Image (cartoon, rainbow, N blue to C red; front, side):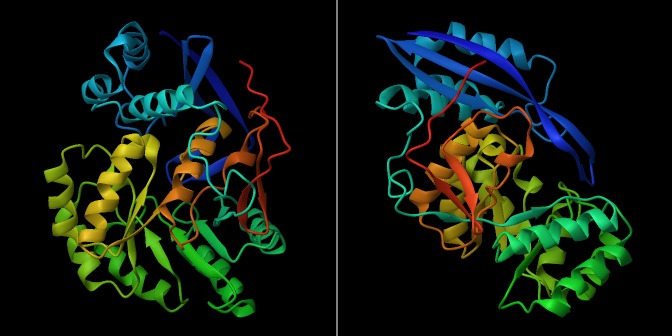
Amino acid sequence: MIAAYKKHILNFKQASGTSRGILKTKETWFLILEHKGKKGIGECGVFRGLSIDDVPDYEEKLQWTCTNIHLGLDILFAELIAFPSIQFGLEQAFISLQNENPFILFPSEFTQEKDSIPINGLIWMGTEAFMKQQIKDKIEAGFSCIKMKIGAIDFQTELQLLQSIRKEYSQNDIELRVDANGAFSPSEALEKLKILSDLDLHSIEQPIKQGQILEMAKLCNQTPLPIALDEELIGVFNVTKKEELLQTIQPQYIILKPSLVGGFKGSQNWIDLAEKYNIGWWITSALESNVGLNAIAQYTYTLKSTLPQGLGTGALFTNNFESPLQVKNGTLQYQQNKNWKFNL
């Protein structure tokens, strides 16, 4: 078996705002395996500033992985415990190599165009006018679940935007989720959650920064609004530590980004623990190209969750790879008659 890696810089169509700053480009890497005339492709979606494996020797670790590909998936996966995005790329590449079509990892009614995955429409931070336009566009595009990033502009303006949606659409019409990306301080968080809870929101992601375990536990205990852990899960590798985290914080939901938590295997660990403690969950992409998004979507469909998933990021880039994935009527769909154009 031969393994190689290639780097690709994804360019945003429009600079996208989060509480961590403005994103204009997104770096990603592809692992390509070749064996007996077949190819396997996997995306290592490192997320600078967020991934635990955002380290100076990332490319060296990719090279080491390719050099040692003969060790096989299980041994490599264990060796790469601190590199969850490479773990995920490896999983994809090995599954891809085994299948007739390298882009069909988990054949299902989704890949056969018989079913679709409900997803949330993502509203990026920006000016009030920009955010209002995005909300209007998502509702017109048929989304029944909207997720709005908050914490970058002032709280009152964000509140007014959410209120304007609720004046027009009840919670039966539009499910509203918000993502604070850790923007609130522990001292103000509960008061802000009380204000937000009047808007019949589904949940809030990561109201305070990760790592404040006792503060987050207290917040989850007192909150009038369901809390979803997101960044809190990053860098927690040991199954015992994962269980301790969920037992201590007792969140209402967890959100899983396979590139950040160790791929399908890492995600499944978290899901099994969440279900043990009656914690809800859903899957979200982490700004991968359509290659990684495709793998996440196919895996997600097999889990049969009824919640809208966070898989609508494929259209954000000017230089993404053409794929059968399309977003239509608030769902992610796979078009069998459309071919992949994967060229680096």
